[in-house]
Amino acid sequence: MNEHGFAACLATILNGEVDIDESFDPDGIHRAVPYDEAGMLTRNAGLVVVMDDGSEFQLTVVRSRGPRK
Image (cartoon, rainbow, N blue to C red):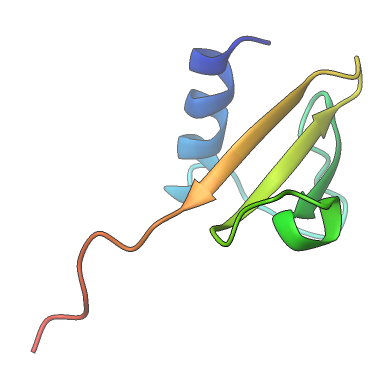
């Protein structure tokens, strides 16, 4: 899976287009680990997603806007 395919898969999940339950197993994902647990040298929040084939994707979480008042 390349970066564009991974992003499309993630968007599908976050947009609720997939019914996620306890038996849900996203195709090809081995595990997701928060940056701090993965030993990443950053203060950013995020995840390292490890695929079944050993490739990894990093997702950095940055708030771009606060709540609306």
